[in-house]
Length: 290
Image 1 (cartoon, rainbow, N blue to C red):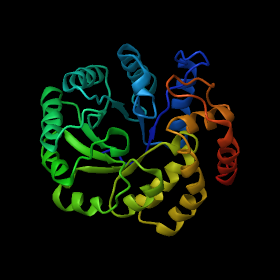
Image 2 (cartoon, rainbow, N blue to C red):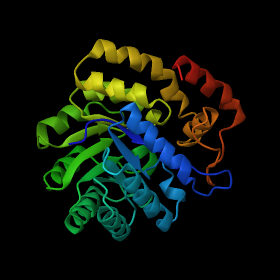
Image 3 (tube, rainbow, N blue to C red):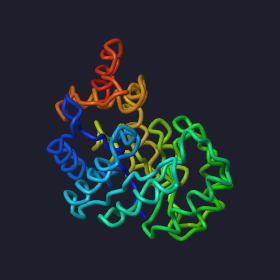
Image 4 (cartoon, one colour):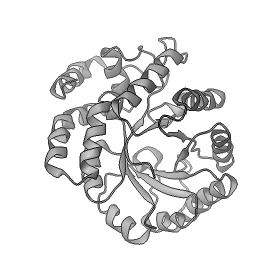
């Protein structure tokens, strides 16, 4: 089981929108040095929606090759077509990803039965460990607890990234899912409480710009040290909010560019952070000590 801080990694781009492989490698080295537990490649924060399928797969391949086993790589391979999700997951598995993260199908709003059959089909087709990803604010569908519990009974569905911010789901998952079923936060503001309640880590946007702080926060929360974890959490609270002043990953990419970590590239229909939010993000970075 992967535990701790899993960065929902941005996909660096040059100002013209082309992929920036040099910056990607520098980010991977930074996270390994900072104590990040795993790399989440080409998820929502990685702009999976704006990458072509060949680009999507090449970013996964590049991360796996460059990381070279130093920490796990979790590949984002979800899609709103079951066949496409199987294809992406199959290629990620063949290229050495350690696990795959599969978002609930977006836009077409499947039923709970449809969600179960979708994830069951992927699990049956590809043997790689698979992590469910529930983010109704993005997908317009909420996977209910009963569906998660049924899916947790499948051997290679090993966890869930819950981005609802609803902490009441954690005790239900722990009571009804297998003991080795991992529960990850996908919501930085509530991640500490999720881990203190028995969760296993945080798939974090904020870790892109504060990797050491998030790694330490997760270490403390997983150890049950509320007092020390809360001190870090409080310092990061303004930044957690600021990174969602516009749709993710707009603010975090701008913040990283301000700190010299990446260039200013982002792809339409996403646009650079609106100037009216610049001061707020900079203030949040300063308050967090970044």
